[in-house]
Amino acid sequence: MNNLEQQHFNELYQQHLVNLALQGMRPSTIDAYARAVRRITEFFDKTPDTLTTLDLKTYFHALIKTHSWSTIKLDRNGLQFFYRHTLNKQWEWLSIVKPPQVKRLPDILATFQVAQLISNTKKQRYQVFFLTLYSMGLRLSEGLNLTIFDIDAKLMQVHIRNGKGGKDRLIPLPRRTLLALRAHWKTHQHKRLIFPGLGVNKDAVMDKGGVQKAIKQVMCDCGIHKNISPHSLRHCFATHLLEQGLDLRSLQALLGHASLNTTAKYTHLTSVSVGNSIDAINQLTDALTLTWEINA
Image 1 (spheres, helix red, strand yellow):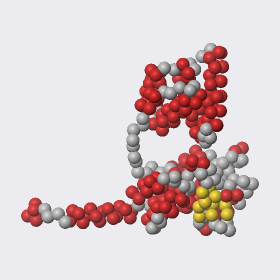
Image 2 (cartoon, one colour):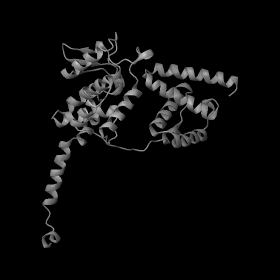
Image 3 (spheres, one colour):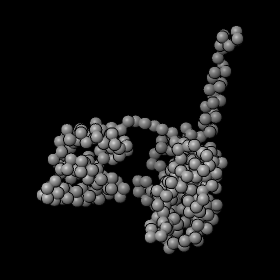
Image 4 (cartoon, rainbow, N blue to C red):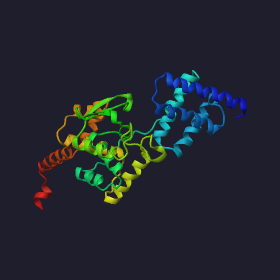
């Protein structure tokens, strides 16, 4: 782009950011939708308001080869927002960019494996963090952003602020987790954060990349060959509570799910459900009268 085109793009881009803010988008969504506009502009080296339908087809066809479907979906949504609110245009063709409908069940650890994972984590900050995620069913970002002001030791509850969808929720604080959090906080005594970063990053939250690497390493050390991430501990929390008899509505509130259907997926992961299914299937097949089996 020449100087005039670059200036024009900058004006469009700034208006895009303003429109995103006016729509009350969360910071992570603003980042993703802004990146979508930058990416397609860099791809063609021309202002996005000059793109044709053929350009969009070319761009998304190329993106499919290099990026995940989650990225493609974000770019599609970001560009739709840009055209609708910044350019006042409708690009109906964008609706054809549809990720495949894939439903996968996450890997789940047994309770003894969760204990093994936490016990074998070498660094205390990660050890306490994994216990925190599991014992309260937190998302990675929710755990990282915990502050000393969120912990109510008298009521034994934790205030989770600005969770997914911008929603707050209150969840019970296990006694064991409170003791672990106190012991960990005493090692750094940060004025606000429970899990601060290290060194020059001590006033920011602990690096999520370090957390993700740590859990992969301890899984390897434990010889557990499952695809486990920090978010998996939230899945384990939900599954294990259902196995203990907690009802779906209560679990929905603990997890902060907007829809009960989202919570209900954990019923497919419990050993109780699997056991009941196995019993039912055995009863079904045992009731069959098979002549070839009798003759044998």
